[in-house]
Image (cartoon, rainbow, N blue to C red; front, side, top):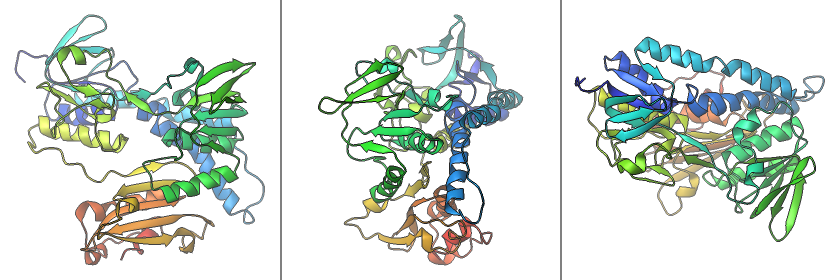
Length: 445
């Protein structure tokens, strides 16, 4: 470290984009600080991935029990207050565990809000100024608010996950990840759910034939989807709310969830004053994650990029910065295939080239119907499909699946995508049998 700076690297943010790189960087001998006014772990740990999957697991179990009804006796009901309490219990200690791990590696934790003063100095809320040779902005995103009259009456995803009682009726604004996932959960618990869509497609970044399967299943279960809803206002109505949409139409519900997306946290950081370039999609960076200002970098969901804004992406970027700052590489960042899943029941998972991108190309698509797989018949899966995309060299370049185990199946295929395995080389992957992995793998060998 140059003696004129307090730290070699200072991260602003408490999520994966910061701590996944900060820890190993400090352990390598660099002097590292992490500044955040959020809980350690950020969105994913505290009000995103970890919390969501804890709320979803009882739904997945309930669906499986429905499928194998006849082999089991009795009905399964979800005790929502108990589910939320369990979620709280298993995530409450994670921020401290992350902090302990970082401190053990040698990271200095500063629990305050930071603002950039110049390319190598930040000021925190109590007025203290810290300097660093390099600064990484990793402030993530927050829930969007629909710009309509009464928008303050809507709730966000964090509030949904902390509900101690499930409302009898819920309006969900938007049709992306959060909308579909929370519609699945709320419907399974017993709420009447109405999804007000911005356009006529849900989950626009996923393969639409599979999205339609999930939408049809949710519709059959009682979820109402209103395409092109054009929600224009929210108003109080007794103990609930009235949602105004379309051509002078309205619906009254007990609770409203704004799931219209997420926006990058770029405000009040001193970015504009410093000249750091950003758009409504986030901070602009080059192929080394450096911003328009030398020595200032950005990572995670706050970055303007085409890659999915997910935990695996943030983790990969943060680890790349560790390698860059520790002198292990000078190469530009090259992203691996980033898998993504929407945790509905069934799930939709995908990685690499989508079947929708193959039209007019020489890529080959092979589809499998999941219920035809003997292993999936064990727990009576009755719906689901998989599309495998191959190039001219018979190398796997894309996988998309809709099924109750889609995320596990797609994870199984990742080594073949990453390493460009040929058909012969794929035989060298020996999976535990029987398992989802072995069952999925037999479809491409």
